[in-house]
Length: 115
Length: 108
Image (cartoon, rainbow over all chains, first blue to last red; front, top):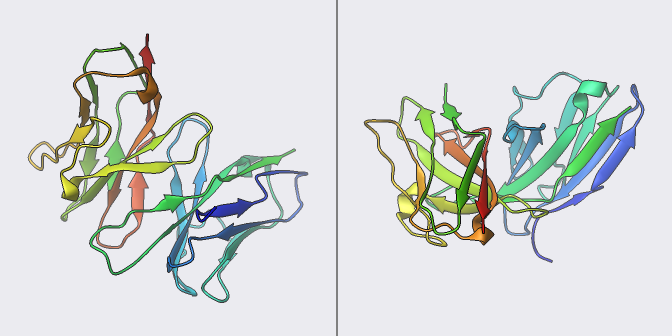
């Protein structure tokens, strides 16, 4: 499968614990995006990378959220001290620069449940 | 600021009926507009984009800058069109904004 992959697909954690999600983009894609999606809503942009540079992070929901893409390939999203309100689907998407449109290819998502 | 509004949470039609999923946007520059679709148990995927002016699976969407709309249309709905549809806008910063989605149900 050469599409975007995310791991794990499901995560159940207790309030206050830290969680980390991984995203592997399509190999030739240099842009990588993270979104959060709650029930009844569309994807909500969190942050994005171009190669290893994090070009926009002001929309991360709080300072408990952080993301990295150390070598410009896979990325991780960490949520520290999780809260029940963090329960959501976390989506990753990738795209390629150098083309005239910004089509994003999405992963299957990681569903987080905070108890 | 950019905003996308999909006024209908749910649209229910019978097979063979015309379909129109509404999308209105707010953006001061020249927008790039997209429709994404998510079928049951599948990932979100691009359906079509305004710049290509193409028809995909019988769906078309025309950008109307005067009405700031990008409605998705299909003349004859099929059962396999049942899915969640999201309108999205991408401005010059490549940060996309998605609408809340419209669930289309096509009854046999």
